[in-house]
Length: 139
Image 1 (spheres, rainbow, N blue to C red):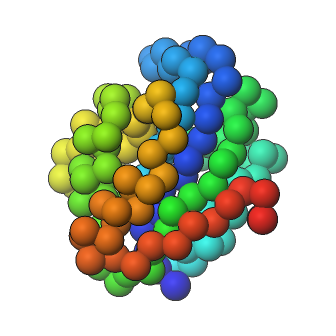
Image 2 (tube, one colour):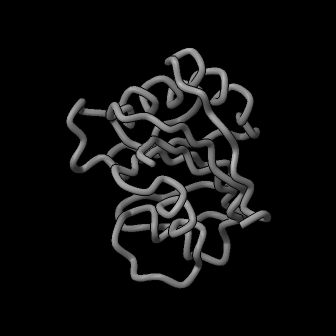
């Protein structure tokens, strides 16, 4: 199943990853899976893995709590549309996860002080998607 997802993470303390200085708070990363959506999300939830993407440096860090993911099946590439809609909810981490972005997103990671799960679900629906939640504890 193909689709789009948004990971939800909580950073417990300040962290430097490459050129980005990240403050404690909730972080949301939007990506796409062109083959197997749930396998991609489960890979992100694994602590032990080869670090391939920017987000892997967060998801393997012990100071990061993996909360869950919002997912939606779609055959249409929606990663950037979803990202642009939901990143308005917080502070975009410019350049993070967007090096190959076709729509020139400022970044595919953003930060908030408070959890924004319901607002993100609403934006997915506004875009015509039927989102569902995967909780990290259930994986």
